[in-house]
Image (cartoon, rainbow, N blue to C red; front, side, top):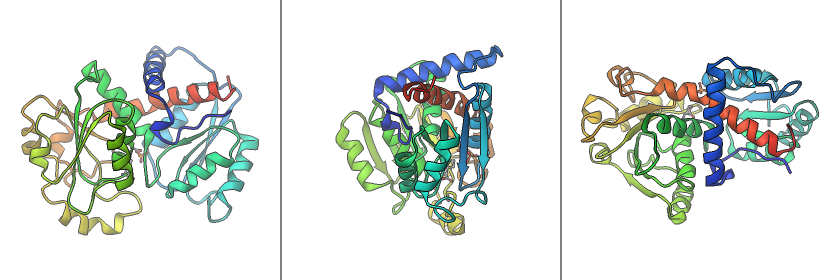
Length: 308
Ligand code: CP
Ligand code: NVA
């Protein structure tokens, strides 16, 4: 049976730890410029219905470092769900490629892609979630803190796809996860309910950022208007007033706190330059770890799908 990675909850807790260990091992090899080619003679289609810098470059670089060949299919190439059905694209690409990575709008489409593909499918972001990002983030936090015990993360901003994947992780690794967002920008209610019901982590929704960041080990943010919402950007700027990560907010935690952002950042909007460029900001470590976390995810699911 093939394995996909569409949600962090597709992995058990043990598998998440195993993936993080594998990511560290692969990263060490990459640093030492040692060759490791489990994907020799294999290929990956990367479907992008939305723009990307990190996801495209990290997947393409990672897959080729692992010995394979990655193909970029941009928004105007295959027209998934428009020019051709998702199911047909899945069946066609499965005849050429050994793995598919996709960044799509509608989450239902990635689920359908995985259902009809006979090769593993990796989610490179949908409107609903971004599991590879949060796997890279937790690897980064682990590198900096050396432990994930007693972790308080306060996410300040829009209750979006990034938050949803944090919830997925919170169902596998215990943490105190607080979302500080304006009224009307809360995360998906059903996922919030399921995450709370899982009972592993403390989850809180708060509308007061200063209070929400008290005792936080990590403050995390993301853009206020995600891809597909850019026409709402001006209105959102008004509604998110007071939710910017600035020196005052970073100084309100009462402890040493790391700053994280999945990037791209709109500097001066959801976060100031002073925070992005502060010594406690680990945004570029996060970006770097995208590649190593994803390499580990791909190596694991390819192996378990009977590929290598
Ligand atoms: N963080 C992230 O996914 O970045 P890109 O949109 O540039 O891929
Ligand atoms: N929430 C953002 C994340 C970008 C990596 C978006 O979907 O645009």
